[in-house]
Image (cartoon, rainbow, N blue to C red; front, side):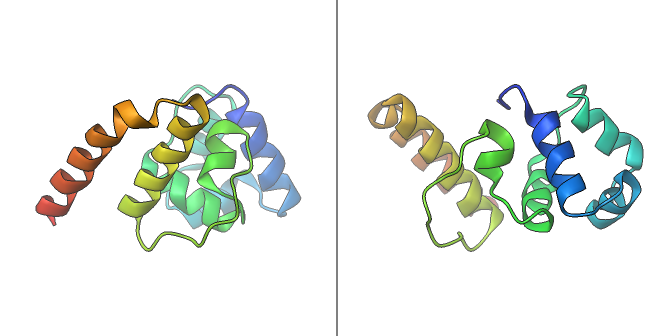
Length: 115
């Protein structure tokens, strides 16, 4: 789930970094229309696009998704690790980590088997 304000955060970061809508779209290998939809919060980006957005805009996925700056941790090695780390950090804030940790482990194991 993406918190309200995602579009404003994306638009603000894009402008701060000096990207036009078209330039960011080209860097993400998507259409400028898609970027505008994201900024208006009419659509949500796929995870791979969100990860690339964060890299290009020099921010974290957590900030784009939730508007919160995460703790300074070394970056995970791949997208799957990033997904796992992001979900754990979001759950930790709500105190439900013990309930969902087994679910995340099953998710991680299933994804690793697909490789």
